[in-house]
Length: 90
Image 1 (cartoon, rainbow, N blue to C red):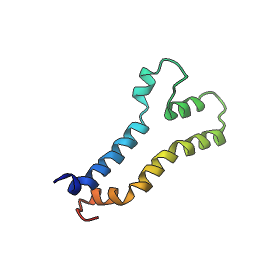
Image 2: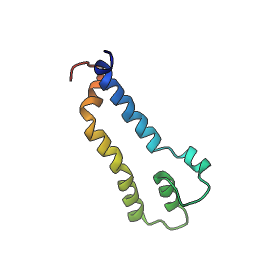
Image 3: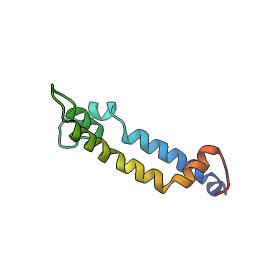
Image 4: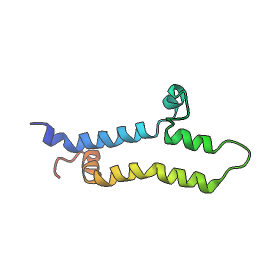
C-alpha cells in the first residue's frame, strides 16, 4: 500500500546511494590489493601521479566515469525530482 506512494522517495534514495558508492575512493583504495580490479576514481588518481600530467587523458577518464551517473539520473529524473520535493503525484 505504501510502496507506490513512496516510489519517488525510494528512487531519490537509490540515486543518491548509487552516486555515493560510485564515487567512493577511500574504501576501494584500502581493500584493493592488486591493480587488476581498480575502480574509476582510483584509476583517475593513478593518472594524476608524477611530474607531468596528460590532462587530455585525465579529462577523458573523468568523462567516461560520469557517463553511468548521467544515464541513471536521466532515466530516473522524473522520480528523483518528485522524491526530493516530497510530492506524491507523478
